[in-house]
Length: 136
Image (cartoon, rainbow, N blue to C red; front, side, top):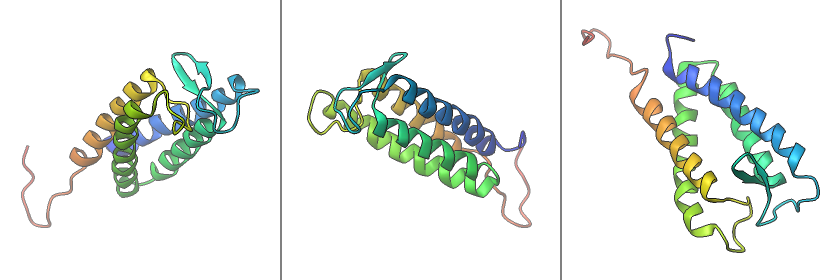
């Protein structure tokens, strides 16, 4: 795994998002499933739906970390989704459409996650063409 940046990133992010999803349930007692305002988990606002999204993302990343190809694909896919969520989140905060209780800190984290996942997913673990010399 150490030889693949995509597998390493998928593993680390997968574990972190699973732990965040589980920790979120410890603070969201009494919060509506898709409430527009949640409870704070450190700086980030979460509700039960947001926690489930974190669990799904974490599971997808962890399962994909088993192979370079899967990790690369999932890193790029989740990175693209987080880029969209980060941008849309800027407009959703404070509206009735904010069903995953996003706040400013969430938006920053989603955009940072997107940059890292997309950057590693698109740039790392490139295979050389058969017969081509690897460039050092």
